[in-house]
Image (cartoon, rainbow, N blue to C red; front, side, top):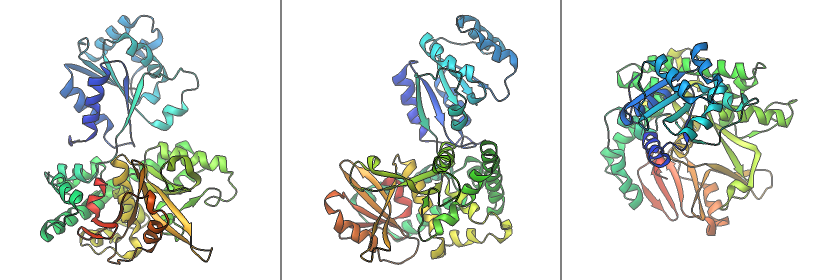
Length: 443
């Protein structure tokens, strides 16, 4: 697997310098998102020695080393003998990969960190890590970081393009780009949406593979996730929820409502199902903010939410998952900039991915129209200091933004600024700034 530059690496480096062995680091993320690769890269660059223990394939001899934690010297001697690596005190990283397969190793973290001789990083399935803790003491000496699919800037880095940060000045100053630059960036962004940010797909793109070959890779990943959901929920409902994401976003209501999405299923059971999907790190749940002012987290309605895929490239494939690959015309539409308006939810998923990758917890908000039967909807809300930022997403050339205008009039004092994320160059219209979609990560 190609070693791509990832932004999380800097956060891992900050953990190493700040923690100095006092905590273990847990890397969370969907399967095949690159957790093992970034851990091994980090270990190679930042430590004099390192080992990775994969508990999905470790034999009984190495598991047996954790049977007696009163003698850590014996444990470390065994690990060195098993791996053939000589440990260097305070300069060795031990990676516990797929740790959900052996809870005893996770429970040992408390003692290993307290011992202080070496650093530890854990990776694994967050769902299984949370479920398989019945008989162990969960270590409090853990810090968590999340690895997302490559964002647009990381995708550009993979392609040898380091220009995106140069455009942040234009974003901050609200200064339009030269048309050739804007057009080139939109072309690159459309390619990014078509490919996505899963490392296997990006590697295939960088190596010159066709979109059909890339689509086959993404279908394999979707099948992998569907199989995982089937193991978690043999009833098949988790897989169905996953498959329904594009159709749910295309509905006029554009939101899930617990018990409505699966009539006959009790709310607590359905809530647990969606929670498990979120913990798989394959999807993002964007909850309804009943009160769109600062402190939105305290006024969320957990029974109303929109669900997006963690990776828009997988979302594109899921939109046409039941069709033959050769019939999937969305790639041609995307790359040529001819995405029809009824597929605008592809851009909405892309903006959600960009906001989450930038550290936001996006929400959405609806409020009734004067007829009392219909609703205005603000696509996304994010917090900024003591204010909120409303965001509307448009894939077409339509300039109207009625919901955003109504929201600004109703909550003028609570708004820092407002954005329409679209395909156009930067321009300002009163309190609303239009920004091209490739700048959504700057918000």
